[in-house]
Image (tube, rainbow, N blue to C red; front, top):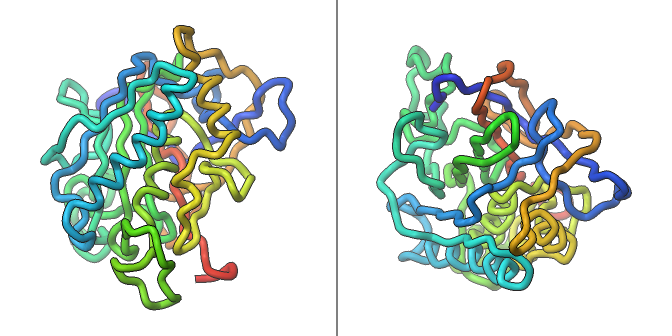
Length: 301
């Protein structure tokens, strides 16, 4: 949903922190065209799970996996920070984005159908980009496993809302820890697209972190089938979190040059590419920040 007075911008940016080499293992997400990065000024960050969960995930295991992903970040916070990240309940809402004058929730939800399969071609949402919310469908590139949409103050980077969409239309989300599914034989009894793996990455975006080039990082842009490694927050990403949210101290600024990077697509052809935006807003804007892209076994899928 597009909020009044807000602008759309698709595709995250990479930040080069001053004094750090290109190989730096963490990157904060930068406000487009500004010397500011995304951060939560109120460090009590409450998430809510959409009550329907995933239709294909057994029982309530997807909710347990969300709790496990949150606990990974919470455990890190207890070591070095005062961010209180937690799941506070469930919601009937299927609306992603900032609701001007409404009740905003940091929502985690599964989109079970593709918009192109259910939305009539003459529906007005095709023009204004509202099909995902209007029809509760996935309206992003097919190669994206999940996508985090953040709403923030364009002057400061202060976050006011963040929502995570999981692409459960083509992908089977699983919650077991072994074995990996054989190629072409996805099932809930083996590891296909792991919920905790995916959500640990997306919560990194929700907290203000961008993709990095290091393939073993929690914030690497792709996740091959059967991957579980992102369940554990890597040391470089952990360092970035501790630097961005030091206990008892304000979040430091992130001055320095930004490097544009293609990582996510809102609409159009399948894949994991980027699209442009719609200009600037005086106060609030929203940003698709970091779709986790599907990787392949042996480089292909």
